Length: 320
Image: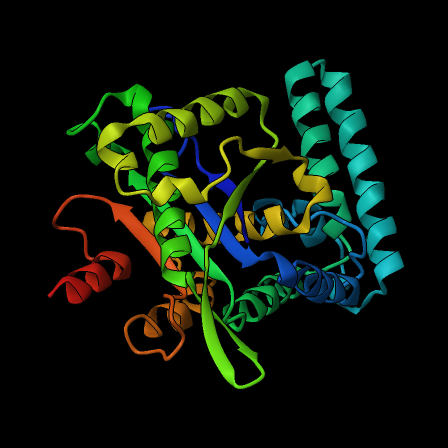
């Protein structure tokens, strides 16, 4: 059985505050879950983040307070935290005196999400993200799945309200195809006989617990299964009917899906390949050339024909 952990980057609303919407997942065999969780938790602990949530977008922001502290890089972790906390309290009091309630709420939100990481410099935080990405890239048993939507191109094909539904349906289809690819035969030897039993792979989708999409995704999955044109392939018999929704703060693998989604959106929106190249390049190079029976990544970019990104370029190469 495979567990496919999903998370989003960007917003599906058009125009919204992002040019792209990305739904990404990491699919792992259920027997590898403990190994994967332990290896990432070990890296987090090395950076003083044992038990903390990995939220890539907040992790890799520039923290203004750090730039105002002389000799920040030379301080201990405890000294860094104390100095940042001092500046944050002063800023909250300053904004409160101005009577800007909205700004005060925004500050508290930023501090709440970034406080776990303030003892690390920006360079150290980038090192942490890259180390985790490198670890994921070496998991030959994990498959990275994603569907990236260029929302401006999307409007030429679909209604604006269908962004989320299309991304989810495509990722589900990709996951179903992966499950079909990994199906094989379990060889059993009994005395002098040798037999093969067909092993059928099943999958469970696990999504970040977002109340606004939980009901939609559950209905989407059921609609996909009921679609005669698709269900006749038998692909969706392998996926459990109801997705599981969990708190990303308590589920390390959802946090890895967040890292995958973030790295893709940074690449397709800003041509920032720092995380993308580490996560996906090794996975892509295995497609079609690895003795392992399944591709290491299934990533698609819904964009115009003139797109020059590596995802679209690889797709063209593979289709020839």
